[in-house]
Length: 91
Image (cartoon, rainbow, N blue to C red; front, side):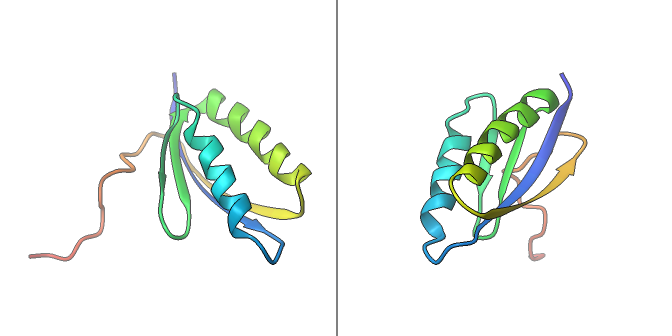
């Protein structure tokens, strides 16, 4: 099982853009096999390579069927600890 990390940003092309983003993230968090973390600008997920792409295929197809949107993804070929802070101020 090859772990990957994906960073996603969803940009619905609509005036009322927040509800589709919240719903998309809610659906991703419902998949127990994914580790999902959100912040103010993106969502990071970690999971099995094959399963992550199956889920993203299903969920982006759904998003695109609900209206015009842009999804931006960055893919890292290994699992990252998405709960750890990597850039912190020195004490």
